[in-house]
Image (tube, rainbow, N blue to C red):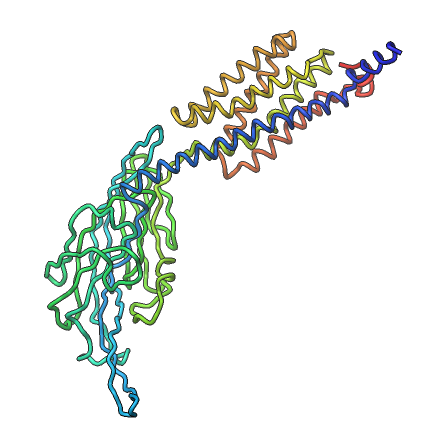
Length: 449
């Protein structure tokens, strides 16, 4: 009876199919720590985002500048019947929003890096020079008599998404007059925050209005503008070398170097989806907000995004490494204990943790190199003892090194990741099929490993 049981156990240990099933189970088991590392990546990314929000809340957030717009009040009269049936003239104040005929914005974005703990947060100091011209509003087409227009209560409004970050006093030069801006949007209702300048003491224009004013803001993440002019021209330059142009219009001209960028936009009236004037009965907030354009100041290598992408390959890399060790078992007629498989897999999981931890201090590329060298050295030295041959240990270590080099290429070429991944898997499968083409699997299964 004991001899029969011993024979059964020997057959089980020698069955390659059962060993493959066991190896597959170990791969699935190691996906648990790999998933935990993936969760840790998300947690550290959230911690970094918290640090970014803490810095930007004090310095200045993403800035969206909307305007300027001319707000002209006017009186609308209508005749109604009172309770006695007598005619009564009632007056109601409405406001007309008028956009500039021409709008020119020149801007300089001076960036710097602030730190919160171990995290770096890029922020900027924005200087804008805004100038242009308003044509004389033709309110006759709105059936508004000239006498009912309240020019003395007109305003200029400018929307600023984070008005707390205004750094200097700003004065409006309006047809040669200097008018200080006041906090709040006043009658300008398109945005919640901003500044306005009351045009008190002004009369009806003879032809139009010339205007000019500076704007100095702190901000972060990005800069966006709204094309309020019938002809809008914008020119921005910065010392940040990694802009990502966004919005409804891309720059007509741009030059990006290692020392910064310059970009210019020229946006005609016909490219917008709203008119040059409307009254307060028309809601334009969403349409105007959707027309913004500008840029984000991006970080070219996001360590957490790279770490998140790399952990997705953990299961595949563990499987390929285990398959290599198993093939060496079959070809060299060795026996590797499941615990040894498990330790090799644990080392491969540790790579992703090392990569994450080191990248927070060294940057992604140096961290990836250090983690790769450390784990390849660890696995190669352990394989030397487990496989009893420097050549076999070199094969395992070389495979792991090749996998990490392959992963680095994948991570650095996101646009071609699918192509590189598909070709790589095809070549790996072809290599396995070539190396095992002469193996008699029936004999290997009977004789054991």
